[in-house]
Length: 132
Image (cartoon, rainbow, N blue to C red):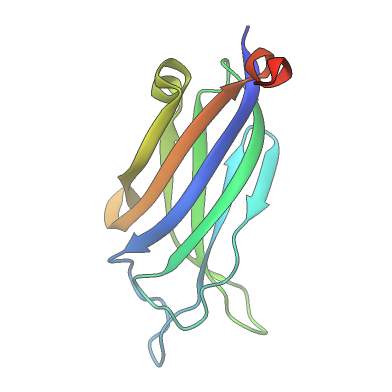
């Protein structure tokens, strides 16, 4: 069973449904890989087309099948609004080693709600230990 690190580049999103009716929403992403969870910064006032260009690292094994994204709108003082979610299968990155930034659909209630752009790189543990 291969273990290693999964590097996730969260580039941005497009065409998200605006949950703030009076102003641009302040979207952020929660990334979940098995029991590990990480959160992006809040793209304040970026509305439906936020850009993050942030990298997250997860420890994974090849039995980890998917990466889950939940997009939310940060609302000061009230509960954050759910914007949509995306699930990215990981089988290809384990085979290929890396996948350039690719667009995935964001859905809410099984309906298309925009898209998210994500790049993936998998580094097996044994390759890291060998050095150059």
